Image (cartoon, rainbow, N blue to C red; front, side):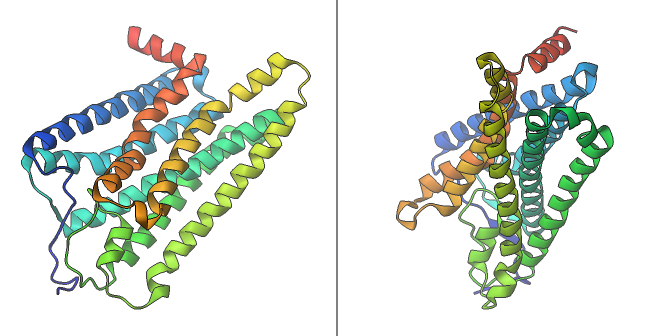
Length: 305
């Protein structure tokens, strides 16, 4: 038995037991992280350098790319370090920092996806008011609100989790530090103190989800009222990348946290954790660039000088 004051480090879940598999996981993580860095870096550079992309949609996409970069840089480097050096240790402060930044960038991404849904709603349902509702100042305020809300939420969650007494050892069942794993080590009997901030965070996320669903109902109704098939296809195609990124973000995270206990196993848990924490930041730039000719053209101009 130990308490939180005596814990100086945590033990992360090993991705593999054999040296060959550890090196294989290192190479896979390296490839995914390089793809995420390259893809998101190109989007940030293209949007920043191309005046044609200085629009609300691409401004929010730039912010989304920044959050993806932050997310993958929070979890992957330590996992790669542990694979290459065959260790599981992470310091107490390092674990707290990892919890904070992972929650911060994950919440920021969800809030930004909600704002991007609003951008699509105004673009399709209220096109005449687009310049008024989504002016440069309004976009800056919405992006700042997303980052600030995520920061305060992550700070609240982290402070609450690491203020709980820990008396069930220091081994985490995950390859990076996250709040559910910290809760498993806690011996606190106060459910309000333990789950109060989590309920608040989930409630806020649920409000965002309801807003997204309501917005897309209105979008689909507006698209179906467009008389020409070409017009309907063009309007709907602007929503496809956002829907794909949103579906990837929600489906992987929801299944990882809400899967039945009977399906739980160490290998499946690791695979799911990689799927919702590492894969989306690498795939999001690809999803957005595949169907967006303006973005592809800007990236090509950037790469060819």
